[in-house]
Every structure is written in C-alpha cells, then in structure tokens.
Length: 75
Image (cartoon, rainbow, N blue to C red; front, side, top):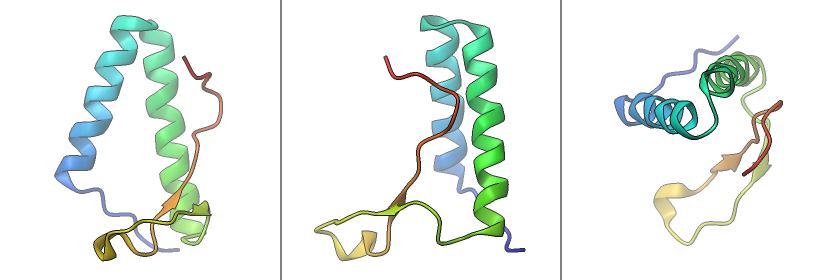
C-alpha cells in the first residue's frame, strides 16, 4: 500500500471546501465531504492509478488524473 502525501495547499483546499459546504449546504454535507475525501485518499493509497487521465497543456501537470467523490451531489 502506498502512502498519500497531502501538501499544505491541498489541506487548505479541503478546509476551504468544508467551510463553503457547511455555510451553503449544511454541516452534514460538509462532514460527508471530508469523510468521502478521506475514503478516496485510502482508495488512492491502494490503487495509485485510479481516476481518469486529464489532458493538460502544462508539463508540470503531466500524469494528472481526476476522481469524483462518491455520495455528493453537484450544485
């Protein structure tokens, strides 16, 4: 099993999304977001290649993949 390292900027993003969801969709939704994010990080540690590849013009973003958290509706 691989280790998932979250950068400080990623941790800040998670907190910002949590606060936004708590303010606009309620605490239950915000809690569900964090729980599902945590589950996705665990899944990622077991399967680092999961998610759909993304095309990015920047070479810095080569190999970037995207993954939608389960259990959340889009606004």
